[in-house]
Amino acid sequence: MPSVSLQNVTKIYGQDTVALDDVSFEIDAGEFVVVLGPSGAGKSTLLRILNGLTPPTEGTVEIGGNPVSNAGSEVGMVFQMHYLIESMSAYRNALTGSLGRTNDLRSVLTLNDGDDKREALRALDTVGLLQEAEQRAGSMSGGQKQRVGIARALVQNPALLLADEPVSSLDPKAARDVMSYMKQAARERELTTLASLHQVNIAREFGDRFIGIRDGSVVFDGSRDDLSMEVVDELYYGESGAGNFSDDDGETETIGAETGGAGS
Ligand SMILES: Nc1ncnc2c1ncn2[C@@H]1O[C@H](COP(=O)(O)OP(=O)(O)OP(=O)(O)O)[C@@H](O)[C@H]1O
Image (spheres, rainbow, N blue to C red):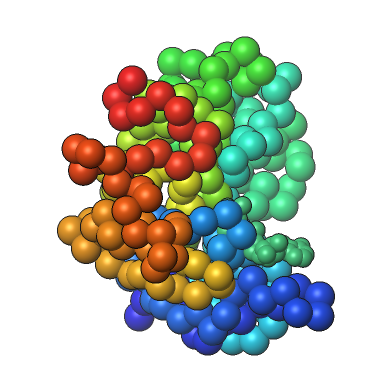
């Protein structure tokens, strides 16, 4: 049974804004999938449908064989903006992930059960922040905050980890750090992961499978080897734009917030 299954999913906002148009794909358990596509392609809509925040207009979505509900506990979410409580420690922030399971505010404020505490520490360890567990989130770097956001999602013990442009606001080094930890967490926990990214070079480095969306349709679904410069050009610029995206040495150019280039 696939971990994620979308069948003929269409999303129309209002009268006629077709954000997703008859999208179907399946993701196997443990796959690390990156969604790519130009602004407005439908990536955020896809993620919102997968976490139950937005109902599809048509089609079916299943996670672990069950229809997506808006209970949300089976889906962990990492956001572009981390949405941490800045006055609380990294540990307390990670612990709020257990709310997804227990729905009990007391578990965060006072009466945590021991399992939740252990899970929060384990998750912080996974993202390399065990030593910083007691540090106030507000005093952490952007990359560290994002890693706390990943820890919080892991504490939820989700069946699917979704990340919506998780490294867009980070410099290239911090972005790579965050992606490395996310990949490691997914591998350790055999966690199915789907991340939308704007930076093609970072996507290429960390993704195992790539789904390209353009104008609401899946126009590419393949491995790193299949993700040629031509495919990337066509994904972002359409057929007429071939050649725009490759530079002279064949490296993929950066999209969006990343400005420093690979490894800088
Ligand atoms: N709540 C909404 N109401 C109306 N239209 C919407 C809504 N959300 C998204 N859209 C439209 O749906 C289309 C897809 O938007 P979506 O945000 O999913 O794209 P995206 O690929 O995530 O873009 P970006 O990379 O800029 O975040 C766009 O035309 C957008 O304007």
